[in-house]
Amino acid sequence: MRLLLDENLPEALVAALRAIGHEVDSVNSLHLKGLDDSALYRTVAPAYDICFTKDAGFVNNVRHMAPFSATKLLRVALPQEPANLFVQSFLLAFQNTDWSRYGHCNDWPCQAPVPPCHPPLPHTAPPLLPLFHKRHIPGGPSHSIRRIRFHKKIKRIPRPPHP
Image: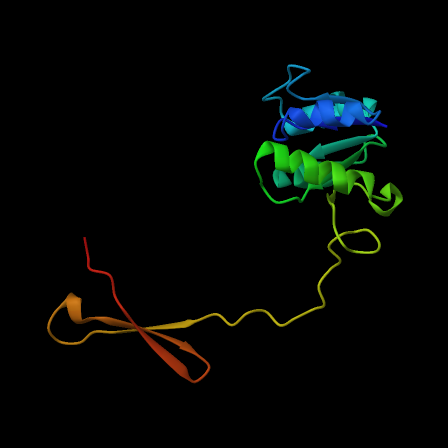
């Protein structure tokens, strides 16, 4: 499998993936660090099967672009760890992944049985917005109070002093 690693993934991952038989390049090894995400995806990524990144912004930008290539862009959702532990976690997840379950711009790895990894949430009512009431108490601004009312519950929050 041909893999491209974004600049936010550890360089040690390149050698580890090559050791298990994959063709791997990184944005750093290609000397493309700092290249705009959309330019990277349009020019470099089509030569690879999967492009891994930890950058949610990169994934969101590409998600809104017209389909350009068959390269899957996956956001690595593993927790941040020291590089050696991250590489071990990545390799373990990588070797146990059924790649047919992941679509373009999904989070990887995840526990969901089918893509996308994060299915839409059921429709819920919008959150209640607080109603702000200002009341001035004689004695100056230091005695002013803001009331925030949620349903029938009232919270009193001291007003910050004026500069």
